Length: 440
Ligand code: URA
Image (cartoon, rainbow, N blue to C red):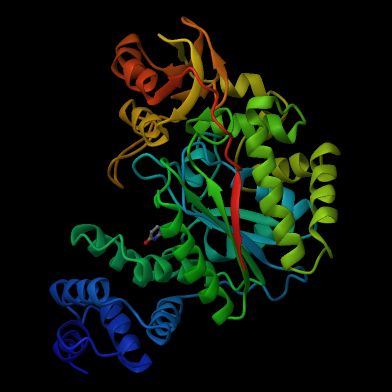
C-alpha cells in the first residue's frame, strides 16, 4: 500500500479507509517508511475529513499495538485508571491513585507532563525529592504489586506511534481534531489493559475544551471508544471555570493533596477532595468492587479518614525512590525552597463573579511554574494560593490570593495579571456545580 494512495483516498476523495489501510499508516509512522510529509498530509486529511466509527476504532487499535502493552493479569485485582483532559490546580490523580488502591483496586496510572497553562502529574511528583517517574514496564508492574499503584511517565515502548504523531500534529496545526485527540488519549489508556476507566473531561475557561458542547462530544467519543475495546468507561464533565482547590503550582499541589490525605482539608481545598472522591467512587462501582455510588462515596471518605490513602501514598513514595517524610513533615516540605509570598489584593469591593482561570495558569507558567515547550525546565516551588473563589465576598484591599515566587520582579510581573483575572461585581453570582454531567 503506497502512502500516496491512502492519502489520496482519505484526503482528496473522502473515502473510508479500511482497518488494514489504517494499520499500514501506523506501521509506516513507526518504521519510518512514511516520510514526515506523508504522515502530516494524512493527519491533515483526517483532521479535515474526520473519521468514521470504524476508522476511529481501527486507528486506536493500530496505535495501541504500535508498541508494548501492560500485562497485569497476575495481579488479582480490578485494574482501573482515571484520565483528566487537564486544568489549573487539577491535582486529583495524586489522591485518586492511593485512595483507589486503599479501596482494593490496582491503578497503573501512566501520566503526562504539563504544557502551557495546564499542569501535569509527573511534574507535581517531581517536586518530591528523589521521586522517580521514569519507571520501566517491569518496575511499574512491581510497584503496583507492592502498593497497588504506580505513577509513571509513558515508557519508551508504550504507544510509540503517539509520540511521533503528537509532535507532527503540533507542527501542522492538527492538535484540535476530535478523532485524533480520542485516538491519542484512548490508545495510551487502553494499552494499560484496564477493566474500568473514568474520564474527567474539563470544561470552562481553564480547560482544553472551554465550550461545554465540545467537551460533551469529546467525552462521548472517548466513552464509546473505551466500550468498543471492552473497558467499562464513563466520563464526568467537570467545572474548570476556577482553579480546583486552594493551590496552583507543582509543590503546592502535592502539599494540598497531603493535607487532604492527612484529614486537614479546609474549605478552600474541599473541591479537590470532593472531585477526587466522586471520580474514585465511580471507579469502585464500574469495576464492580462496590454496588452503588453512595456506598462507594462512603468507603472513599472512610479510607481518607482512617489514614489508609496516606499510608498507600507513603509506601508508593518509598517504592519510587522519594522522600516519604513529607507525609509527616508536610509544612517543612512546603517550605523546602526559599520562596517569597506576595499577596495580590483587590482594588474593588463586591463578589467574585468570574476567575479567568487560564490567565492564572498562564501567569504561573510565566514565572516558571509551567512550560511553554516540552523541553522547558520548570520551577516546582512557584505557584498561586487561591484565597477567594467564585461567589466569595471581597473588600477593597483584601487578599484575593498569594503568589509564591522567587523574587520581587516575578511578583511584579504577574500581580496585575492575576488581579485582573478576578472579575468582581456587586451581585453575588449563582454557583456552578463541580460535576456538570455524566456520560455513560
Ligand atoms: N492529550 C493527549 O494525550 N493527546 C491529545 O491529542 C490531546 C491531549
